[in-house]
Length: 409
Image (cartoon, helix red, strand yellow):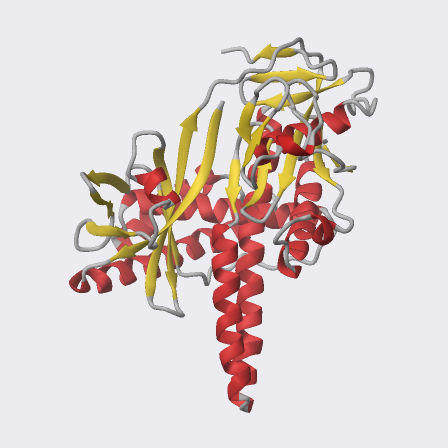
């Protein structure tokens, strides 16, 4: 099983390279927009062009000549544009009123060729980023405290650092890198599989979404941005001027656009995971009264969970995959390996240890498997009919009897 998470770390950028990085970011956004503009112009048959390969063949050479942007960043820009165009087309098919994708967020997508990571002994590590004027070396700036998850993800051999997204925070003038990290863990469940497959999704505050295949989407960035917006809004409300109120309204619009963009990306990844495992169903916990039963949940998360579910629902329908909510009772207390349900099994917010069989695993991952099992054991059939559902795991599938079949190589 391969676990995936996102590590968000602040970067220390040398003063003499900040203009180079700013220019790179502005040009990346311009290039992504040019790819999106061309795709929106339609092909000869009148369809929006959503193929990355097709867009690249039409625009890549010209934007490289016009801008001189690093080749791997151009690839990141065309990927961003293609994803946005596909999302727009999916919303059109769902009957939504959709306009051309536009890019205003100060971000850059870095693949593994455009960013490199280095450890520096006992000191915080650093990365180098492709930019105008050559690569920019950026030191990692970790928050205070001995138990720093960013350092555990980025400065040890336990996790592999992959691609990343660079963000510029206009409020504090700092750069933040959101790094995708991976870690391999053995899967321990046993059994035999049948035909239809269920992907389970657990929702939370620390991790916005965790899938039964072991993929995590951290809530750290959401929480950080929410807290920053709340802090600035509070300061502006104390000011009380007409200008301050206009700024608050503008901030609200910007925050909603940013939130929706992140939720679209997560929903797309969930659907792609379902497709990769040939799933017939995606199971979420019932969102009714979620604020009352989730520790630390705030109004923001309740809205985000419902929006995420809607995005997944219409994206999945395009591929014939149904999205269902199931009763969440005891999913956090039940052992997904042996079925023992005890409050004591949930030893902390992040840790699960079965008091009967000793199974230890991340609590959110255990809950995601239980969410899928709820639907799996409800007697539902796959859309094609006749096949009992099974649970999608990273290393195979688990059926309603608790029997596991490994994935073929």
